[in-house]
Image (cartoon, rainbow, N blue to C red; front, side):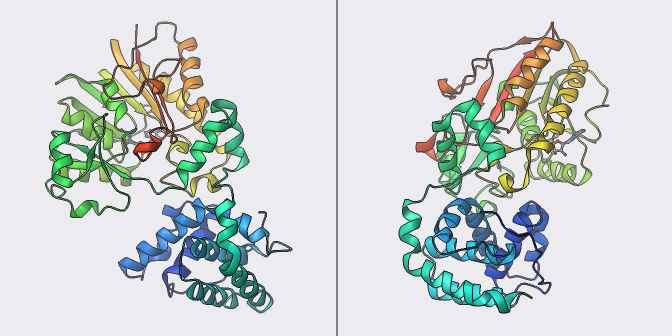
Length: 427
Ligand SMILES: C[S@@+](CC[C@H](N)C(=O)[O-])C[C@H]1O[C@@H](n2cnc3c(N)ncnc32)[C@H](O)[C@@H]1O
């Protein structure tokens, strides 16, 4: 649904979770900001209201296409963007079983408080009353989700229409929470009441209170999607090997490498994000040398390098439903060029015969398979190592070498983030 762009004029502390959710979705849909960049709007709200506002915003962004399908039945003309945002928010809440009376009243009040409210509150009231009556029936037969064209096109070309429909189905489901154990994953699964996955991660239901789990304060585990836990296992450092984690923050892979006994150097450009690596290492009692620096200019010699390069993050759509509405194809072209430069520089940091794992949490082959194919052409001495990791599904093995994971995989287990990873060896 195309909207007229106009910023909403509300600046006080939000009066309710719904008002905060409205501001979050306008930050994403009108101002083009990611949710984490807009979370200042939650300040002043009690923790339960903050959590509710985030859930409402995430639900709305996940189900936007479905909400638009419902609204299209009642809207002759698309209203200005802030009004449309309220209608979408309210439609999603109603169609997911919220208290229609309360939702409609507050939505109309939100529109009435806008400068243009006098013109649109009657429309909001009329449309939402109809949504409350007939909307859920339309919702039930609407297509579950629809990725924006800039992303859908390349994904259909890469993986086919059926896979993309599977990805779209996956992203409307709140994802489970995966943990990586510092020690024995089976013991952790027992202690926290989670499910031990074949790849060694421990899975909890969505919304689990991680900091309340036994072992959290002692640093017995950290949160890491099951897919994100695989690159460090693919690198498989030997105890004492000098390993460089080149884009390390917030440090999930650094902790894995350190827990495997490697002599780890963790580097990242972002000072604030690197502070989180230090905090994470402290909590888990693991150690690594922590450097704030540029992966493109860092010098040194290492037995192995893990390059978890900055990317479109399109593999994490389940966890970041704001992403398809903010990221655009032109920004990804710059990331692809940066990844190639990082890969080339990372290879100069390896001892002869050293190993490099390149990975991205992207669904786009240009940030995965094609990126590595180009690197292999630029570096004739480079070879692909087998991706032998226990517990991975055979369909994850990419014909180009390495592993390709998508959010439609493991649908019966609660899904998994999208990732590409490959191990390379310097000749
Ligand atoms: C995909 S995230 C890394 C996630 C991390 N490996 C983990 O497992 O927790 C990419 C990281 O690259 C960092 N980055 C971006 N450009 C960089 C550069 N030129 N040098 C070093 N780090 C960079 C970002 O700050 C970001 O933390």
